[in-house]
Amino acid sequence: MEFNSLLELVGSDPVFSSSLLLAGNVDPKPIRLQLSRWVKTGLIHQIRRGLYAIAPPYQKTKPHPFLVANHLQRASYVSLQSALAYYGLIPETMFSTTSVSTGRPERLVTPLGIYEFRHLKTELFFGYLLVDLGGQSAFLAAPEKALLDLVYLHPGGDAAAYLNELRLQNTELIDLDLLKNYSEKFHTPKLDKAYKKIMQIIVGNDAAFEEL
Image (cartoon, rainbow, N blue to C red; front, side, top):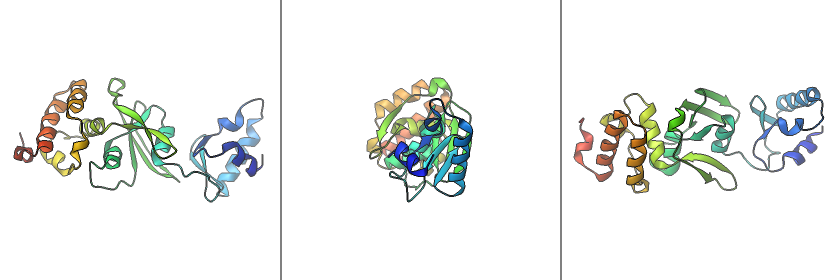
C-alpha cells in the first residue's frame, strides 16, 4: 500500500486501527511491515499496539487527548484532574490525561502525550457523558462524578486539607443534588464524609477549613 492510499482510507479520522487495513481477504504480514516502516520514518505515530495516528504535516485532524484516551482503553472515560481542569473547577493545567477504567491501571507514554488510567469497579462506572470536542467527541465524567472519582481513588481524599488544596472554583457548575445522588451510589463512609465537606466548601462555610 502506498502512503497516499492510507491517507485516503483514513481520511479525517484522528486515530485509526490496523484492523482498518486488515479487513477482508488480505495478507496481514506485509501490511504490518509497512505500518512499522511508516512509524520508523515518522509518517505515522504508533499510540499502542494496533492503534495509530497520522503524523504532522499529513494529518487532517489533530487528535484530541480525550479522544485518544478513550481509544487506548475502550471501557474508560476521562475523569479526575483532567475532567476537573476541563470544566475549570481546578486552576491547574494538566500535562497528562487521566481516566478511570474497568480495565487494568496503567500509565502510557505515547507520541501524543501521557495517559494514566485508574481502575474503577464496574458498579461505579457511571456518571459520564459524550462530549463534543469541536468535531471530535469523547466520554468524559460529569463534573460531580469527576470530583467524587478523585476523592474515592485518592488516599485521604476525604480529608478537609486535601479537598481545600484542590482550590475548587466555578463551583456553580456543580449540581448539588446530583453530587449527593452520586456520592450515595458509592455506598462508602468515605464518600459520605467527603460530600459533607465539599458542600461546606461550596457554600463558603469556614468549617470547611477545619478537620471534622
